[in-house]
Image 1 (cartoon, rainbow, N blue to C red):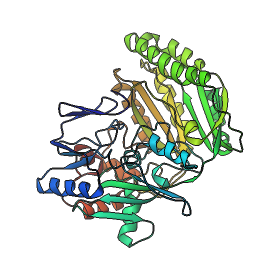
Image 2 (image 1 turned 135 degrees about the vertical axis):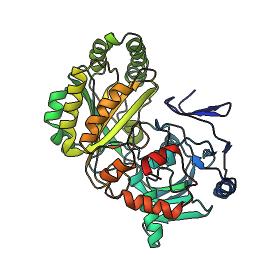
Image 3 (image 1 turned 180 degrees about the horizontal axis):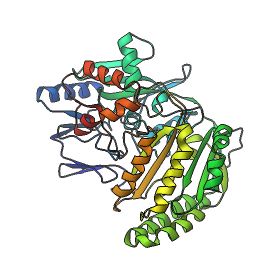
Amino acid sequence: MGSTASTRNGTWRNWGGTVLAHPAREVTPASVDELAAAVRRAAEDGLPVKAVGTGHSFTSIAATDGVQIRPHLLAGIRDIDREAGTVTVGAGTPLKRLNTALAREGLSLTNMGDIMEQTVSGATSTGTHGTGRDSASLAAQIRGLELVTADGSVLTCSQEGTDEERAVFAAARIGLGALGVVSAITFAVEPVFLLTAREEPMPLDRVLAEFDELHAENEHFEFYWFPHTGNTNTKRNNRSAGPERPVHPVRGWIDDEFLSNGVFQAANWVGRAAPATVPALARVSSRALSARTYTDIPYKVFTSPRRVRFVEMEYAVPREALVDTLRELKAMVDRSPLRVSFPVEVRTAPADDIPLSTASGRDTAYIAVHMFRGTPYQGYFTAAERIFTAHEGRPHWGKINTRDASYFSRVYPRFAEFTALRDRLDPERLFRNDYLRRVLGT
């Protein structure tokens, strides 16, 4: 099935295997004019419209029984403005294609997530992020947007422009597909730089005791805690004057392919078949990766291959609540019969000014829980979600959650600003689906 979603016999299935949909028709526009025509025609036929990228969301945010827009022909770099420090790309451009194209031009995004299979519009519309003390999500790096709205018109917006264009820009950077179909994105970029990554195991107690310092002293800090153990693997990425010292190809294959994908996959198969073996496997997994330091260009440090299929829930909590939240999560796992074979990933982001960003208005820590695809995840995720919501957590829009509009209106101070804009831009709810009905209300 490759690294993306697939459509067979009219049935669309997402990457994680958690969502099926049966679109009435699929459209693959090759230009913004074709996209606008497809939106107008859908409205005439009374069909809802949803754009779908590579299907990396675990929620049904991209599912539709109406018109499914596949944007993969709206791809590639449209324009590079070196003076302004921006690049404009088609919405269907995969992040990995953007990263390699920018590197060839001697440019880079400032920060990025750890997976680069997604399209730029899918990743930004759901709030995809990496980890950073000062630099924020992909959407926070957007400087301009082009989108087709419900009436079939093409709207370009940025921080400059009319009041309405500024309002649309503010919200549509993380628009959930509710405000229109994004056709192009302008990102801020900078001259390519080097990062030195320092990865090392560290006891969980030490990471939690020193979390504030680890966060303050590193531009990008993250760690993975292995449930059923007191072990973590930490990762610190900081800018470097060089020289480049990439991971040795053999070492890279052993760590990234053999241990992180191959052996990890096998361990998960064993754990799925015999859950009682999971704690012992977790102890082995948590010690498999030894310390390493390397220096390379950003996308080669920030991103890594993910071939083991999983299901994920991720919540953003106020950064000062991280240590308590994680201790509660560990206590819950320790006293439960749950057997969790996937590590828990912890990252951070500074506050930003995007209404529906998980980091909107507050310094944030992210806690992501995963389960191997095909194992029952509901018990673990339900118990974890109870802990996260007690800390006013905000779920990643593309990852499993059970929250609704009444909850979101409490934890997002600017929620009403977003829904009012949606009422203006899409009063007939052309871009509706069941997920948006739940999270944004009717």
